[in-house]
Amino acid sequence: MRFKGVIFDLDGTLVNSLEDIADAMNNVLQSLDFATHSYDDYQYFIGSGLRNLVSKALPENHKDENQIDCCYQLMVKEYRSICTRKTKQYDGVFKLLDQLIERGIKLSIFSNKAEDLTQEITTALFPNYFNPVIGLTTEPLKKPNPFKATAISQNLELKPEEIIFVGDSGIDMQTATNANMYAVGVSWGYRPKEELLSNGAKKVLDHPLDLISIL
Image (cartoon, rainbow, N blue to C red; front, side, top):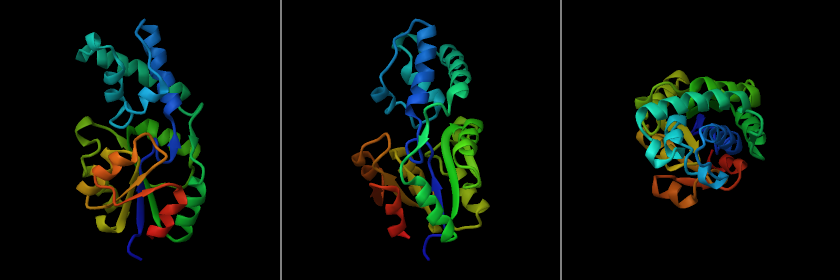
């Protein structure tokens, strides 16, 4: 078997968390009398970490570093309280994970969401499926930096080329390429198929179980 492990992105790949993220940020914006945004807008805010999302959501004349830092803290606190309220697994994900485990495939998560929140959501929605579960701990190491993806391959005791990296954004595809992993996009996430292909996706899945054919 060519591939022995799969690293998944979380938001937009395994779970639809857009509404919880958007609700949390909009609650913060409302508390400051700032304009809120639609769920469609948040599809393009998600992917580079919550601090980056906060910066994109703030009004143009309130994007100084102090304001971003303050709103980031408020957003994380708000999001932590509702992070699994509306968030749910995409249809077919559990069937895929069960089949991968039956085949002896090692599974991990690498997200640009803060690591404690990534682990909290994973524990709540996917108990005992993934190890390790890695999130953002410091801005320089977030995707598309391949450092943590490479560290995951070492943890799994696999070569990078034995790992499929699955995600819904161009950033995920760049991460896979940078780490010398096989880049696979998903069409059900927050970004268009064209973005995935233009950033290096080897395949784009229309349903989670389509991943089995790549194995």
